[in-house]
Length: 255
Image (cartoon, rainbow, N blue to C red):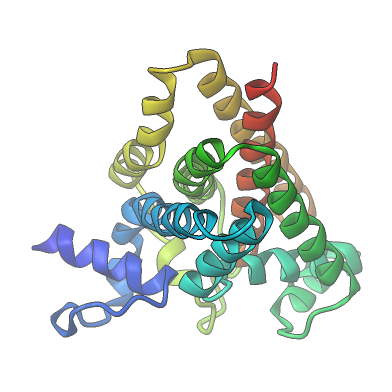
């Protein structure tokens, strides 16, 4: 029951899906619930893939992809996209760590954030469109959990820099990530990729390496600019890792 509660906590934190009332809200349990963040990503990817497949039966693929992306954004409340926009504004407009953090905390979107959102969303749309229907569905099922696994890696290996901010939403999640969360989260996040590897090992390896490369580069950038990560950084990393994985899948699929 504890593990089921933690899964529901992760689901409530990252999506707009209603959870049973008995789950309650326990911020101190959120760090343990982090192990199920990639599993929540798999659920989001499954919904997006289902919408894509159903819409493609009656609509052109370009509109089906658009509806699929809209479904995933509605399901998560644009949680990760908001982090991407805030991070772009912060890193683009701030010259000191303190100023970067101040800008990232501002809910208003600026030029850097708007440009980043347009480019990443357009990139994902065009990449999924370039794949056939089957390939796009596979991409959604693989990249949503794998990209959230990338964010979990950063949570487990880097310092959360808003630890003194009691109002920071990610604070109870970021503190206390341990080996159990990383191991279980890795299993949940990489299981679809492992399934892909049974059909094409080189393709799966390329996707994995691209996601790891984005994680390493982004993590180094976060550490250099602000000395660690914030919740917005995790959202930005998820979006970038998802896009990188999809682009790698496309590049290797047409080799």
